[in-house]
Image (cartoon, rainbow, N blue to C red; front, side):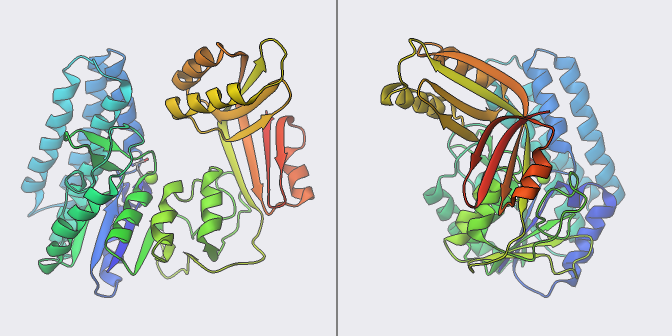
Length: 421
Ligand code: ASP
Ligand code: MG
């Protein structure tokens, strides 16, 4: 049994969905679990719906949602004949779920509403694709992953309840393979024990697929992308980026930790723990070798470059110019934990602590407010964090020249530089 994951770009329009079907037809017969993301930029569009709703702009939210609805109905119409009516009914049920909510007034926190709205992207895409595959005689069973993936209620970054979810996979998913060879389900989403929808963090579908691979003891997982495989830099930012044919789990965890957009940071562990290889392949040309990620120790990797935009630098200064002792540091970490903030880079000095975090205005305000009880606080925004693994000095020089450097950390394998434009 294998797990396949198809991201938004691989199902962004009718042509791509047809391509997915031909790709599956070329595969050797095998039991498959297919995890699919929302179509194209649907998640971004749904984020806008949730924001408009939360800001009290109901008409705008409804209008934005109308666009999402039409786009999916049109796609379904183009693809489906015999399965159209059943699929349309299924889509309309999901539309209604969201619209009910949009007619309410927001009384809970934003992240809750975000998840209730945004989760529909994956439900819509999988409903259409599952129906289309069945119409192409690629017999498959659609599953609502919210019946399988139980999570906590940390909305927008929910954690999976492994024990409960494993039980559901064993009891509900495994027996389904007696009736079908292929299961189609959603990435990125789950549900709490109160049946509230949750999401696992942007780009979370890779992780969903890895959880399934782990729990089903899959022979491998394949992530199908629009690039040749894992590159040593984002080809959109660096046209000279090159393919890395073979990587190991640890390197990918490092890359993801520093913000490489290749694979969701949480994806590797579930695979590594069971030694399940991860293939990253190109859905535009499945004959290309792609990248394999496994357990082997590797030497001679090229420099791996990661740029993280929209960074904020927070300076904390001890109020009475006393040394920054253990107590304020402990309190600061406590704050990070409470606000669920992960510093991307941190440096402590005698009377200062500086750290760089993703610029999420709401979180930074809360952090600055609480930290100001212990420190003088200053925040600088609009920064870029450059990370190079396996760097050399000339590359570092080239990448940071002409930039104002605000913070730098250099270790034998990794250098990180926080820069202003
Ligand atoms: N659709 C979600 C996103 O765009 C999850 C994913 O694609 O992995 O973030
Ligand atoms: Mg995606």
